[in-house]
Image (cartoon, rainbow over all chains, first blue to last red; front, top):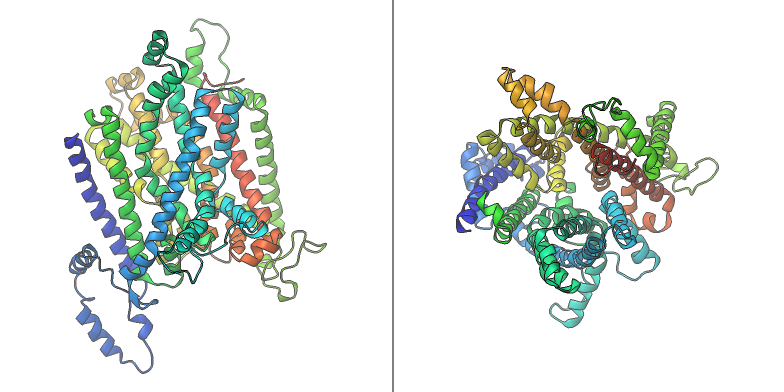
Length: 320
Length: 305
């Protein structure tokens, strides 16, 4: 197990380096730099060139890359030249919103997927199974953003049950019970919209797992021993089918990031996904590189966690 | 297409049976007739595609995207069947042109990702060993990156942004799924006798891959590309919705939906965004239905017909 984990972690290093190079090259290709906005009639172009020289922007790329990575490791992403504040501070304000949105979505995804997957797998090819399969089918074909728009229109505007934008009611003091409840209230609709659509893959996986396991020899043995139907399902089948699902949560991070970009923009939810889109509209490139890098690192680390958990759960992966 | 289902069919029939085995087309046709939903989907798709491409020959895109300040936000009426948007532009015309643009780019991206993914998967699976290992590590890296994020970042920095660059960016981050499927198929396939026999006869690797391995993956390729087409329509409209898809002068289904980010439009002007949403849903569902029917046709155990 240790051997596998170490090997898997070592694979991550070139991935991280590759990601940082891609993002660095992207940042270099972006038109203009932080001083372009200052060009004007009363600014001496020669002075700007001097500043560029002092900041090291004329150094060879590998020196600039080294300096940039050095800063990033220390948590220094430079300054946002639209919000006029350090990027790390800006991200600090937003990141927890996205983290909470992702956690609540993930919990809801599993809360929906596990019962539906079990019903569908246990009673496969009955009307219950067909109902669940129909749902996964529609979920697979519906783009998240359309579903989210309809949810916002129905529950946000027409019925008015949930707030239509923001992450908390303004004016509440942080740390109080009202503040917490208001946060939860703002989270429900976005998280539900995302969970209802993204849950289909987990349901399908769980269903196929259970249908496969049902015909295995050890289940026949358990039945032959006289184990009750309840015991067969709870002790034998579910233990084998649920563990991989639990391990998948790391892979889900990539999907959650893609989803949060849409969800946060539709529900006006101030998180990282919204920041990413804002930074492009405002041409705020230091923020763009920082958010892209963070999202990329989160995905890579998520895949690492999932691979390691899966290797613990399923010994076949380790041996390979 | 004729190769489709040939392998499974040969196994089902006894070698000495005098009856000719049904062709790939007739298997697909039987499956479609048996599955009414897929048949209806196929008819719907043929109708909508011929309608959209037919009408857009008459419609003038420049005429439709021209701003007319006198007819802003008109609800559906005699002059504008589906009303107008914030620039007084006809929604119905935009819907037709948008569907055409969305479909065209989805088809283009599906074909390009198909070519790259198939070549990558075949080479990786056929050669195996260290080559396969290295190629799979590269694929893993691309697979981990969140698609929406990386495409947005690339769209933002491309200097001369056009439909071509957009489809290239999308292709660059969408070839991994089909590559992985083809690779695992190629890994199984290359152990089979016909490939081994070909090797013994001294055929070049190139010849084996493209004249023997590729045709035997064709059923998988057709099914995967059909399902990818549906997914690509969703991805394109999603990116256009966020404002990182088609350039502004080119309407797409996602562009119409992006007007709904204005709460006023979302709440009171349904005619702008509801038709486009329904069209995207119907397109994706029916392409999926056809794809699933094709999938069953390629697997004798799942066939209904």
